[in-house]
Image (cartoon, rainbow, N blue to C red):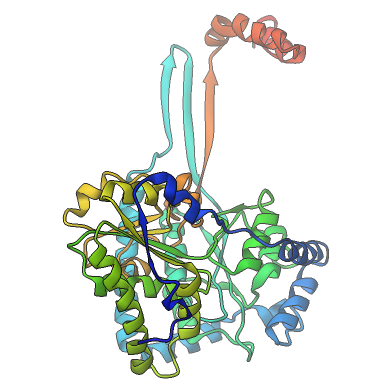
Length: 452
């Protein structure tokens, strides 16, 4: 069995009512003040010195030597070379990418059909009211580097933007230590028809996209996942540009009854723990057998994965995450499990109950929901079609997954004829005078006297 420091920590918590649960979930993701101060400095520096500062920090943090923005910009030749390399060497991966693209595209095209469009209606004679629905013109997609390469995140962010009709999509991603970009990302840039890509990551990328530079034009919105420094930078520049969300560590809640398979439950808790030492993995079940067997499975499967992938498994990350952030909770019934899940408002929720669609009726707050024993989060991460850029840290109580709606802006439209204005004008004047905005009142009255 895996030598988990959490062997004694991974225990079954028994809860009989909702109040007992709240004490287990007090901690919330917060950006440390020292990170905020450090990022503020970078953002201000890039705001003032533009590309010079962005490149300075890129060279410092990523150990490269870019002399000017052209060094940091991905060329058409690089994209072509990467595309050909992946085409010739990764046939099965290309099949997976194409299926993922098709599913994601299909979901977001369907999503668009259910979004409001530009519309007008005549509320009364001489009055037309309405709304313009217009796509954003220029956005930045941020793709993290570091521990992993994330081709799936590129698909998840670019496809809904294209479906919405965004014309200019810029990508920022950190360079590798040799100053290059992963061939897999280069393949996707060509596949998705993206040509403006900068090998710049971290807070400096966010600041450059938010404020623009001498040669780099600012964007309207920045989307995509990133580390705590990227999140801090997005928080600081919000208002100068739009952002998708302030993402904290990844999280999963699983609601399971006696019909669940503890092997599946254990595997899915581990898959979430693999993301980050701070990832949270929580099981809510009304079955003591499922609770206890899941703890056994977690330990057993870590050992099995280490044997299957010697030297490759991020077992230290998994073990740290499981030790500090995994909770196995025995609830008196599934209703209580659902209430606790709604309180947590998890990024990912799996429902493994006898009738998952009935349990779904109890759910109010979750970023993305996966139903049945055969729909793990990994389906949504890669190929299911729904978006994997999701609200974290309880923000699912008020926010939603990334979607086509994130790439639109709305404008209200009003038309009054002379007759309509005259009919309602005195009422408008009354409001204006009540608020002591007499120039407002005059802007109405003057139109009676000077009809053209």
